[in-house]
Length: 271
Ligand code: GDP
Ligand code: K
Ligand code: MG
Image 1: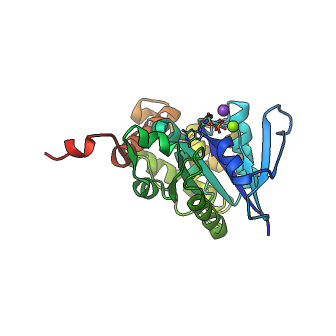
Image 2: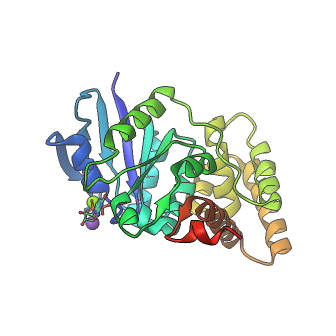
Image 3: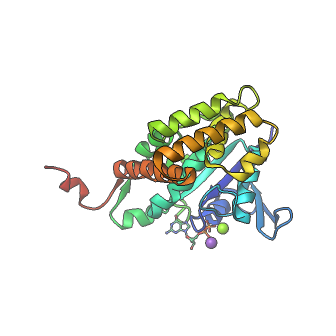
């Protein structure tokens, strides 16, 4: 049986470098349907039944740029067996913003913390065990350029793909938002597969136009989401999208605080 693994990450996180390491010469280049955004697919070296797709570089899964729409629609429609999310470890905060969104899709996923050579050269460390726990997925440090950590990454990605189900998506928001999301999820009844519920609850809460479109025959869920959203916006005196973004960055900050150590920090924490 053929397995599909998608490579997703920010622009310049090292996707192409990793794609080349993973696939060697076994690749084909085309365009995504209807747009002149390059589409690369390849076969995992030594695993002729595993296909790798290199998605366009993106900073978020909002549906506003062509790259975001391509990546998002691919993940939602094709539901690959696993996602390898490549993270630029020298730019953790910005990269983890996308990671937390990808995790919500309910697709088995592995975080590949790249550029670890750069991180080490700066005298810094990233604790992948902490990231793994906080993200609810395996996290592996790699250097795509120096070809290190690749074997561990492939093992983790194949393991995730073979399991076919993602773990429980981490509840990263505060109590008010989490209870809002639970209310929206409860309005879905049986129509939404359980692994996709959290993604759609968040998107409907945010008022995402593309998600609303795919619920156009489910007036009950749309009405529930609108009611919950308006209540939260009044309570926070902010719009739903900013509430979610703010809380996402709050969780990312706590993750980085625990996982990312800079030179000398270990000494300074002894009081
Ligand atoms: P993409 O935009 O995500 O496809 O990123 P690229 O693969 O084109 O990489 C962007 C730049 O980062 C290139 O100059 C790569 O050589 C470099 N790069 C990629 N991975 C690593 C790495 O692990 N360490 C270092 N030092 N540079 C890397
Ligand atoms: K690039
Ligand atoms: Mg690239």
